[in-house]
Image (cartoon, rainbow over the protein chains, first blue to last red):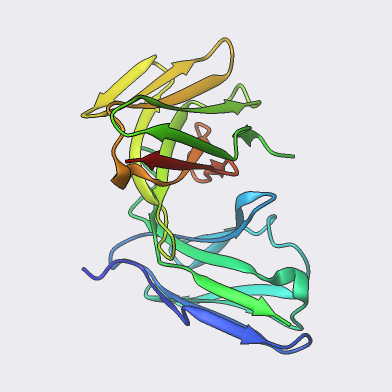
Length: 115
Length: 112
């Protein structure tokens, strides 16, 4: 398996523009997580899905952020409109089931810069 | 509020010596703890974990110690190698097990 795939790897955009980040989880994994990494807060969980259904989106910072998982092999995180403070590295991770002994597998991340 | 804290943003050690990375947590419901390692431009990768029913778990050069009364865990790397230079994240989860709570990370530099 190729692991968790994220695209794009880098995104530079201007304030006010819409940004869409994409994730393909590992096949067969039931859980998908979106994280944001910042120096101040480390890895923050934004939202996670179980079997394509959003379970907890309490970490989504504002209504400008939205996430979807239309099928088991694809998820998007959208920011509209984007702001400079959204600049960060966004990670997608997946895990096989709710057994806590199974770790989450992370993608390489998308580095977002909002000018 | 951060439920998992790593108070040392960075650490430098000489090759061959011991590296000790520390992590504190506030939620007494946490019962499973993990360490992740992250290289630049890559996603975090799982390193080692420990259940709250144990106080020590060892895997090769890596050992994690858990002190539940102090709500503290540490990762020991012996001997440290230059390839260990990375950012290390501590994470915790509660019995529901769905969500990991991560610390802010400690950047380890092993000096050859």
